[in-house]
Length: 202
Image (cartoon, rainbow, N blue to C red; front, side, top):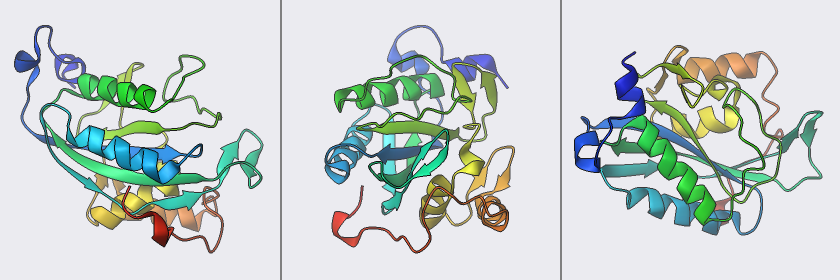
């Protein structure tokens, strides 16, 4: 891919505009008022410069994951997916996502690549899952997210707002979710759990 497209150009914001693309952002939270935080984060996304539209799934709950597997005793996650139509370069969008996390109390204990899972609880987690059809192996901008196809709490809400969604390099999202469920690895959400009707749109 074109590295300058992934990283963004030097200079002011006006020079960093690109054609509008659909970027997929996964939201998660398991501390504090999860629904309120995610609603505020969605509003923050919609107010970003060069963002034209934000479509958001209904939230679902998922069990917290640890290096040992699922931990039902830990605070449960609320998860959602937003499809963001934007003209921001992906590197700039990712920087804005991190700023929104910090605004809502997220502290990152250490710098790590998206290839490395993080197990800590968090007030807000915003992951850039995909940016159009861009594929990047830059450690600071891995696209698509390297573990997206392994997460039913990403794939399921994504499909709810885009039934024809495609994950670059992995194919159709509905097929990826079917493979995940067929392999018996859909451990991210306990059997029989459902979206929380009282929490509304994230």
